[in-house]
Image 1: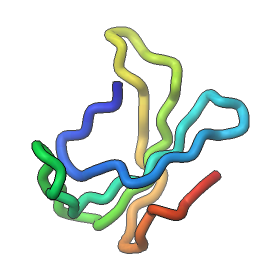
Image 2 (image 1 turned 90 degrees about the horizontal axis):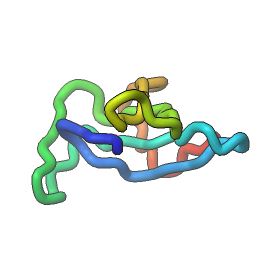
Image 3 (image 1 turned 180 degrees about the horizontal axis):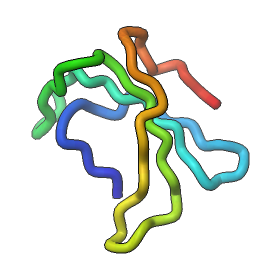
Length: 75
C-alpha cells in the first residue's frame, strides 16, 4: 500500500516490465476526504516499486518536482 500524508495521486502509468509504477501527485489538492495540501512543489512524480518491502509497504521515491501538472506524464 502507498500511503500519502498529503496531496493526491492524479495519474499512474505502469512500466513495460510491470515492476514499477509512475505516479503523478498533486501536492496542492485537499478536496479528497482526509487529504491536505503538502506545501512546497506543486506536483511530484513518484516511482513506486510493485514488490512490497518488509511490513507490506511499497518502496517509492520522488523522481521529479515542479510546477507543471503531472496528469499527462507517462514512461
